[in-house]
Amino acid sequence: MTNSRICTASDLAVSAIQLSPIIVIFSIPLTIAMGLDIFELFGEAPFALALSTPLAFVLLRRFSPRAPAQHQAAL
Image 1 (tube, rainbow, N blue to C red):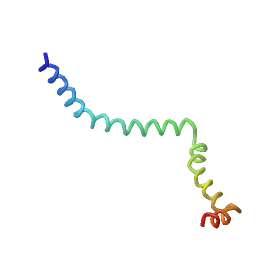
Image 2: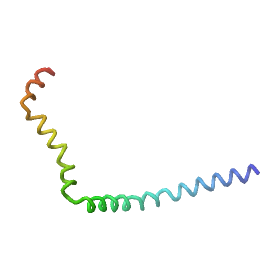
Image 3: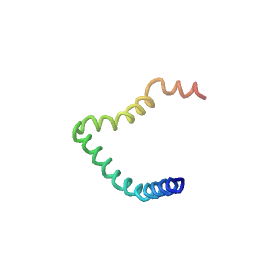
Image 4: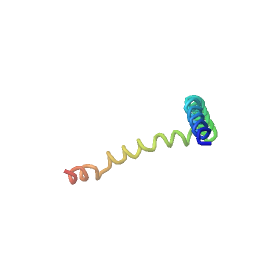
């Protein structure tokens, strides 16, 4: 009884090791396709806005009137 459990567990482990590269290979195009579907569903404007928002925050923070005062206070 114990020998069959050991063989079964080792066979399942070997199967998992052999299947893992196949799962990774197929999951990458699936993830890209899902991202493109979301991009197509919501359109380009929200996507462009989401990409440019961090840049806008950085520029607003850097060129705000309080930026030199905050810089001097940090020193």
